[in-house]
Length: 279
Image 1 (cartoon, rainbow, N blue to C red):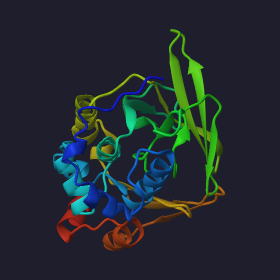
Image 2 (image 1 turned 180 degrees about the vertical axis):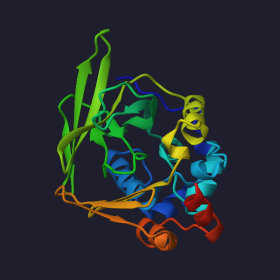
Image 3 (image 1 turned 120 degrees about the vertical axis):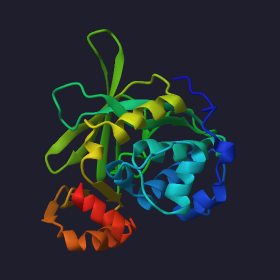
Image 4 (image 1 turned 90 degrees about the vertical axis):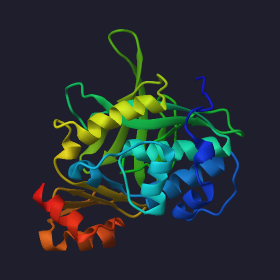
């Protein structure tokens, strides 16, 4: 696979010190595989997934300064386009080679859904393999997965698998599977067709503002760690563990702000909470 330097991802405009501080990362700054693994894990476990602004109708610009201000300086979360824009800028700043891609969320669906998921294929300076970096899904993985047919990866009990298939038109499609309470489930598909910042702007505009997008209708929030995966859908709070066990409870409206802050690391003011509950 031919990768590119990701020109146009505004890595030179990123405050790398602030970003790495947000992740709690103080290690080496070099485009190596060990650094990629460490950054991936730190990003996924430090910055939550959330769509609050989409529900509230607040614009979500994807220039690096705006994304950095929201996810780093104001310590909020974001959805995949924001996460991947930030991660791509950091990788570019550090000298990694990568290709941005778009995927289709499937989660076992039997119909074709729009390509509205952002992810990266990355190579390191000390390794000739290509690695799938999926930092914006909200449910891991904790590290890069080798982009190879049949590759399996396990991170602290969380299991993932990649498959390459040829569609009816003869084009390769990649499928990422995750092992969960119901066994292996296809999480999303993607191709290696390069995407650029403007492509993500278009996709984000649909996800964050179109009336048919589920992200403008109700709250989605996720916080992922080695020990557990928290998810809120509306007021339903689900916690999944690496062994596949799961708990579910309903959050009382009066307790939503506390749960988001304590369990998800998402700090909202009272006005934002009130507007979310009225959505």
